[in-house]
Amino acid sequence: MLDNILTALWLALAPAVLWAVPRTRRMTGDWMTALRNVPPGCLVTFLLPVLAYFCLDFLGNEKELFVLRRVWRPFWIGVFSILAGLGLIAFLNRVSHSRHPPERKTSFLPYVAVYVFYAVTAIVLSTLISFAVMMRNSSGFRGNWRTSLLPPENGVRVAFQQAAIHPFLAEYDYRLRFRSGSSEEYHALQTNTGGRTHFNLYRLKDGRLLFSDRDHDYLVDVPSRKIEYLFLHDGTFYTVPYRHHGFCSRGRSESDGAVEFTFDGKTVKASPVDPALLEGKTYYGCLTDDFYPASEKAETPVEKRNPF
Image (cartoon, one colour):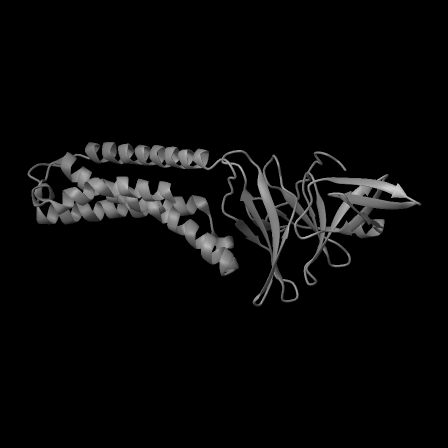
């Protein structure tokens, strides 16, 4: 937020002064006209994506306007922002020339030079401020929760949320949010200590969803809001109830022929999984920067980093 505010002030300062002072407002030289009219166009080009991201995060996530996630295309937002900025520059030029006609033929070179100068300095300034803020808050750093909405099931909508826990490394906290009417529950998943987010989602024969990434597997029953942790032991898959807040340590053992799972010092009996349940799974979609159904992104297998 601070980087956006300071960058916007940088882009707005010079033209605000030049338009406010009568003497500079009436000047018709190419360089003065460019310094008056180009930065506002750069400001519009900068602010439109910021506002678009705000709408995506606030309306698309909090208000669950799922259509915003589908129509969001960064490339086209960028193209529209640039065209809007150039359009504002052309409009301000027209106003300037109509009120104070230039005494000689104008040149485009000052406009190009000023545009490039402000575009480059805005990018550099925004990047440096963002980096400085992140480094200052690197201890205990947590980014904003980014929400990926899944289609609702039986009146319950599940959302996958991720928040960066390092200023620049790919480390994330994960959680699932279940929402039905005014009721809301959060279930923390295991932290990703290294690597970009990539979950494959599968639909099982019994209707549950399988969330699978490099490190962990979860069986999620959306209507009942229950999660089970899935793990492999001696060639057989087992599940144990998953707690809302995850665990820091884990282990497995056998006692009297039964498989037990130990997390944070607590031991629970594991239940074997019918092999047919997993063999009959169908690819449902994936989670990366957002949720993409199978119709939009084909399955990319994830290689288990530390098979457990």
